Image (cartoon, rainbow, N blue to C red):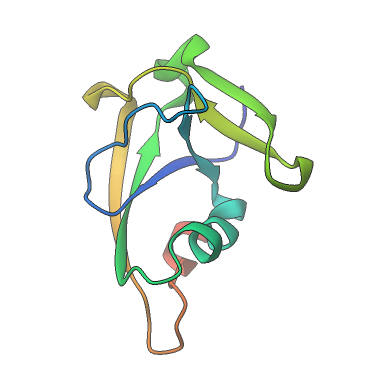
Length: 104
C-alpha cells in the first residue's frame, strides 16, 4: 500500500457517493492543490477526509487519472470507519487554500 496520505475532498463534510466512473475520487497530499484548483475553483471552504488505506482494502485502487498521474480511487462507499481524520480548510485572501498544516 502507499505511504502517502490519502484525502477525499468534500464541500459538505460527508463523503461523496460513487460517481458515474464507478468510483469515488481521492487525492494524495501532494495532489490536493491541483485537485482543489481544478474541481473546486469557486468554493470558499472544503472538508478533507483523511482515509485509512488499510481499512479501505481492496476498494482502494491506485490508477492513472489526470495527465496519467496515479490517483487513489475508492470502488465502493466510504464508511465512517474508513475516515481517520477531518480537516476544514478555507480559501485564503490570496485565493488559494492553505494546506501547509497537512504537510507538517
